[in-house]
Image (cartoon, rainbow, N blue to C red; front, top):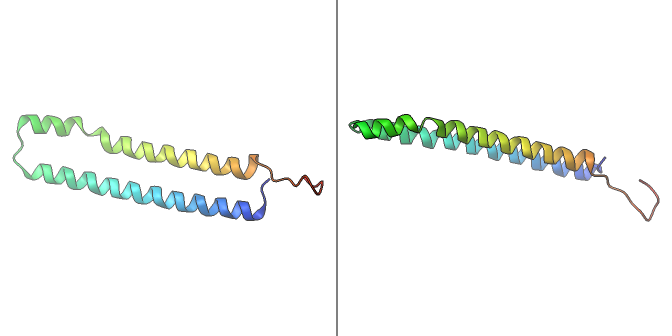
Length: 94
């Protein structure tokens, strides 16, 4: 088990990381929706319609990528708190 100060620091890192990932997800969704609505305002030619149809997976891939980063960050914080131990070899306390 890690020390209390280390656990507090890792908790703050986790909260800030999750907030940043949430903001990135929101910004990515807004950017892609604005790009899609901008393209939809123009007259649709067959090539553009096909390109939009082929690009439907981009937002889903972006969200899965952010979810993957969240899982990795959560596991790494767990690893720092639970798996890593603070020990003090000079005092004999483990």
